[in-house]
Image 1 (spheres, rainbow, N blue to C red):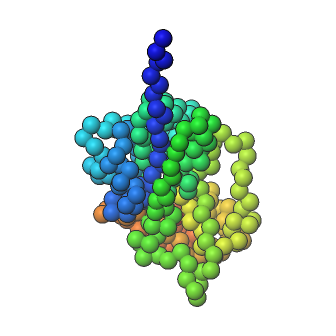
Image 2: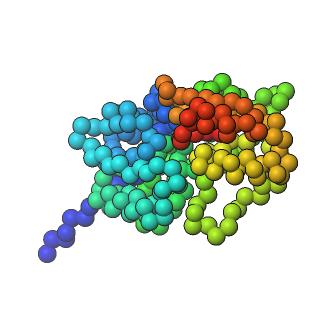
Image 3: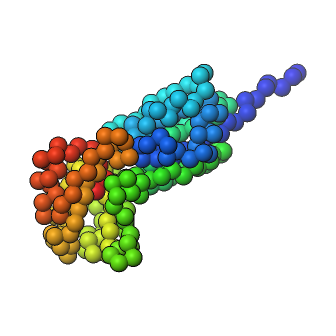
Length: 239
């Protein structure tokens, strides 16, 4: 009796789309987009990058705006990656910024590894680095800042308590970069100032960084909230 044909397992590539400007996509990322059978993309991945996909590639949008990507939704994405690869498809998971900088890439490769699904990770320009650069703000400077810390402005709501050590965060590095911080901006500033960061510390909020309509507001921790309200700054924002 002839054996049943078996479907060859496909492969998943987690590709960093960069912070917005499509020209910041890596050459390897473009190469994989052009070969993908299925393209699964996020809210913060520039839709212009979809033009690199094959005409017959299936495109699936799984993005949600800030703070609304709950654990159940992430589990659905994980299962979609797994089932697509098990169907023998070449899959690109296109993620805004870099997959491993507050992008849940770690959770996705854990799920793939548990199912023995082959995967590749293509780094992207993180918004934590690329957005300030486009605004002309160096994160380090030989005369001013010798250290930098990246911080999420929105912790997993499923956590029973915050993992932030504000006393160390507030004064432990010269430059602090917060991603997804707008919703918690007053609380973040309050914690920083009450744990040793001077209210006169320069601050910047950069909306839709690296896009043609990027908007930057500068000030200090003492007045940046007022400046943001006056300029109608809305997410996505790098602080």
